Structures are given as C-alpha cells and as structure tokens.
Length: 331
Image 1 (tube, rainbow, N blue to C red):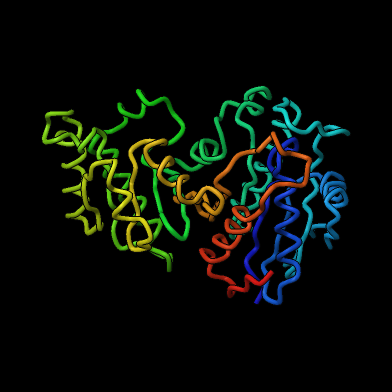
Image 2: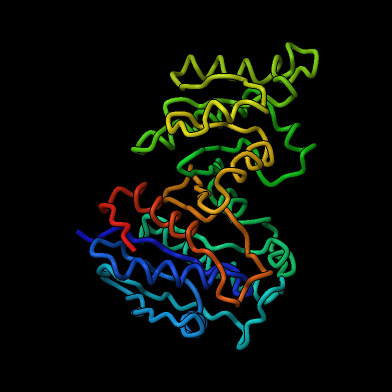
C-alpha cells in the first residue's frame, strides 16, 4: 500500500522554510518505511538551497497522473523572482509563499493528499503582497468555516477558541452558542484520532475564572452554560479553570487538552515548554494540516542554522493522523 501523501509547502523563501523542509525531506528519504513527500515550491530554489546546505536531496518531478511511490517529489511552482533576498519580509516572497500554500491546499481538497505540512510564512509579507488573510489558518477558515487551531507536543496539547484577532474582539466572541459549536466541532474532529484526549479542560477568561462574578461575569453568563450544554451532548469537557493553573492539569498528561479562549492565553504556556518541538495542527478540514510552532526566523535565514525538529515532528504527526503508514523515525 502506498504511504500517506504529504504535501510540504516551502513557506517564505526569505525565511528558514526552505531550509527546514529540505533537511526534513532528506531525513525521511533514508527511512525504510516512509511517506510520499511532495514539496510545493520552486524547483530551482529547492535545488539551490539543498546545494548551499551540502545536502544531496534525491527528488523526482511530481507526476501529473497515477499514484506516486514513496519518495520525495517536487510540484514546481515558480517563485516569480530569480534571486531570493533572505532575512526580510518582501512582497515577492509573500506572494510566492501564498502560491505554494494555495496549490497544496487545492491538491488536498481534490483528495490527492492526506495532509499538508506548512513551513512558516511572514504575515507582514502577505500584507505587502495585498493578501487579505493574516495567515494559513485564516485562509483555511475562509475555505472551510469552523477550522480549529490546535498545538501538540509530547508535554502539552492546546486548542484555541479564537486565534489571530485583537484581544478586545476575542472577548466579544465568547458567547455560549459559539463556544458550544466549537466544542462540538473539536470533539467531532478528534473522534477518529488515536491520539484523542479524554478530557477538554476549558480555561476561564478572567483571573481566577471570574471568582464567582467578582472579577468578571463572562464565566457565569457564557462559559459555564456552554460547558453544561456540551456535557449533555457527551463531550468530555471540564472547567472553567483559572487560566494561570489549567496548564498544570494538562502538563505531561496526554489525556487532557486545554481549550484556551484566546491566542496568547494558550500559546504562552505552550511555547514555554514546547517551543522547539511543538506542532500546530488544524482540524475541521477534509484533510490534515500541520506546521511547526515557530516563525520565519529571518535573523538566521540563509545561514544553515535552522533546527528542523519542529517541522519533522509536524510531518510525523501528519503521518500518524493520516493512519496510512507505520512509524519509522530513525535518523
């Protein structure tokens, strides 16, 4: 049986994306049991980057028809520039990173990929290119309403009720019906996963989870009623817990996933313990999408110093969630 077909996007050409993609693909190509890896990006850029890193990457052109065998393929998408300038957000690089991502998502939407693993993009570069989305998840939410941003590591698992929006707007989003719908979607998305947590521990919004209304009424008026309704549907939710202690409940406990109500509430705790190894996984899609939990690292781009551990973990999680091949993570 052909292994999982995993699309890898290069990310921003001026960041560390090409480097970590190439380093990861090189490690996978030496394994006995490996997936089909398709790199969506400029083939000339990929080969030049590999040569600069001193890596011999054995690739083939992605076939226009038929089922590819295990190996590394290039789905060539021109970057639109002959010379890539590293270490800075540029309009041309933002446009190229979006084209790489857009084509991979199209392919996955047609059922040609089990998963898409995205290298980091620069949100500022997408803005310079005139793109209306703040990042990968916002674009996926545009195509697939209800997309859920989650973060996974060996030590902690977190799902975000809201993600890239101003804090004042995130607070306005905390309504019981929206929270119930989110929990139902999260529960449904994880229902087929062997890594499914047994408990969704929901953080409160206010200090001490509102202290019974003394420090805010959002828990009483919106969060608690939502959790009560979700429990009646059989969803394994608990809380709301004080935001400063909920992570202690989930740390090193794979049975518990923290539901954070806004971006930094979830990501400060997660990145503190899993910055180098964390994986961002988007659920609520007809395919799996994962990515490393770090950015473009413009400060070290082009110097060969990028650590590919998080991107490799993202590929491994995508393979695991696809259920189409056994694990072999030597190398």
